[in-house]
Length: 186
Image (cartoon, rainbow, N blue to C red):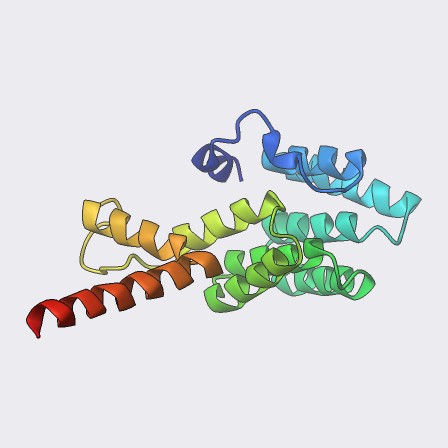
């Protein structure tokens, strides 16, 4: 996860601000971001021993299991249990999305990330999930390198179009452009 952290420019740990989770969960999540998966998993398990109903810790434990052991089925079960415990929280959906992305199930992962974004649009963990999604999906022009300027521009445009507001503006600009083109040609 640290390469994603550098990718996002979150070296100072500011990713853990903005969501109402317990400080213990954020401390475990920081360990996970610093690639101490064993330590993070132990912290999440300790939190769950103290409070078995903590869905945020269960979601974090699911991510730890997926990253550390590669047991995606077990991790998915833990994340689904987190969703069952708190269906209005983004934590379980984020964990499901992240686990599916780790398991190369891009469309399912993206769908869960979008559900998490719908529930908590300002959840900073979503940036990690979307960065992983952008990194894993194929480039827009398959014959060019991912770092080619055309792929970088088109990939940025594709990422920008995630927002409903941006999609509406793009359609409005396209409609306006078509109107102006027809007015000029007629």
